[in-house]
Length: 567
Figure 1: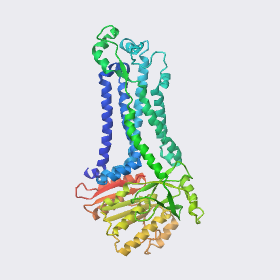
Figure 2: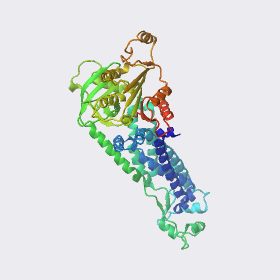
Figure 3: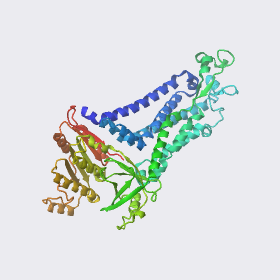
Figure 4: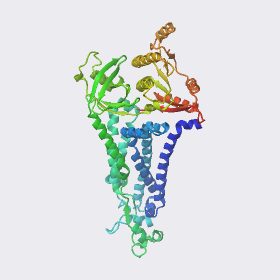
């Protein structure tokens, strides 16, 4: 149990806190409307659907307050910087911002469903208040408001009123439909297949959040749900008068009750986060106007494009990423790319694997398809937003770091390995890290020959420095054909690996993670080990379990802290 808490405790605390606040807000509001004296007559008309609709509305307001915060990249970066003095396992929770954003969205969907269903019951109950079958108190409550001196409780004034028409003609009804439609569009466009194949559909649909919030703010101004005023409660004794409703207005003890609609409250919840998000977008816009100069374009094998750039005032840390925008390709698309340069270099660079329409267009715009010198003034204009931090920037906070990449997930570790080696070889640069393990699992290395070149240069430097133990790297090849297998077998006894050209031989097949984690734990007793991974979800789940399993329950034992790259 103790080793499981090493990675899961902070996440569990945040999750329980969020769920606890939702539960408290729902329960407190439900109790207020289910038992509050001001809503006795409202409950007589609507029943428990009143409390369900109001409790879900409160939870909706709370989650709409939160929904924009996890996707405010600059806010997350600021919090990461301000949390630099905090423990790593607390700061790591900021890397789950997208997942938290999705969980909040699921809660909004749930509470929206409850709210809509409850209000459908409410509208029907309001309508039934005028039906011929309604007698006694229900009929009396619905008839209040006929005279100009009375304030109504039932917004539907006659039984002939069509509830659907009444819903579509009211402020609450129209804005409710708009909110629901925009929410459905935002949710459905967030599917992975839409994001990958039709990014602009996702982009446009998600920006309907502007309409969503405007509708949310206006929604409560209709004041359909009404309760008794405090003054009326003093003059009109509900406990006594509801049994003498036929005598209302005729006896001094029971004047006609006065009702009021609740003040719109949603704007109070969402004003601050919307202002913060507007500031976020203004910062992004200002950055998009800053000049970015492409100083070098390198075309690597397998259609991998390396862009080396400069931008005034640009400061980075290893493991960070940027968003790249090219107006000549698309006015709306911003794509994230991990920085592959180290902070010690005089430029920043990214490696782009051509996989889709946007990257293909950028490949051609940079002249990579013709493989000849391109005049600098012919280079496409690009804008850069960032850099932004990810889990990997904490790699220097551990005594031992384990870097695990699968396929294209190797990109974030280019910058990290460069920076680790640079710091390790300069005595003036203090670093906590004592040892690095690097694992790379890929089907083939052709698409990443540029990275094999980086490892080769690090290998040569380690040999010159006589420090072969600091960086331990393991490459696993999971795909090969019969011709490659024969070639590998023929040259296996050579000093250099036939696939990568490295002195470290390539392994064939997949790693035995139990064996690897056990070995790391034995070699590094009483150490904090940071495990950093970039790759597919299935392997991420396996590594997460390994970290929990091999973390020692003893305070002075080896502890594995799992960090997943999310961009």
